Length: 206
Image (tube, rainbow, N blue to C red; front, side, top):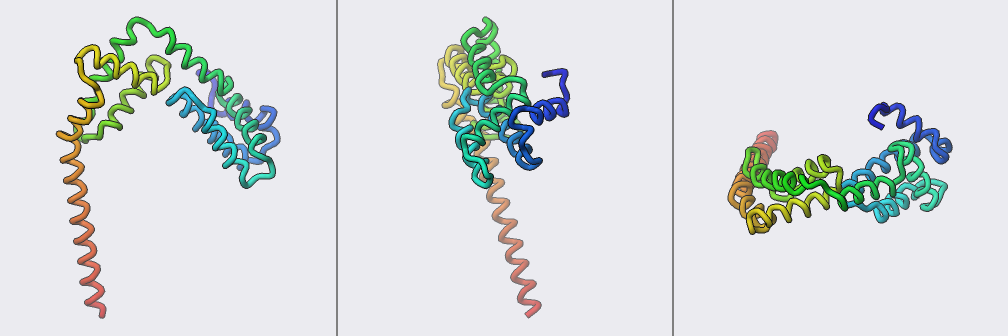
């Protein structure tokens, strides 16, 4: 897949069993759903519930039912990525079962970046920093983001004897929350000022 262009993937999806029957708008929607499902598998290692939900939504304004909508999405996904939804899922989970010895060390490195991301300007909340580090580790090890988060948490606990979540929330309270509260206060002041200026203009016109 790495040597193929986007046009190649679109053509493969278009020439799939279901792809050949779709209008342009129907194909574009199925293509978008396939991308969303890919992201969900990479995040959680699961696609069953999202596939059902999106297939129902996809079929709602079409002449086909949800089962047909699901079959279409599966075919377009296969064409887009060169593998089935389940093959994508199994490949990620298989890697998680047999991680290299370096995985723990890499997980610790990424776990350590969480605190750095929270503190560095522009500051960010724990959940965003944790997610960014997990996405980076997941891509590096070719595992799910949930698996990466579990690895990071275990590695941090083993190294520091503390829970990564608790440490992250402490740093968030110390570094991000004051900045966020100042931003909210500034925004409110700007809104009040704008409202006051608007009232003055209205009175002057009257």
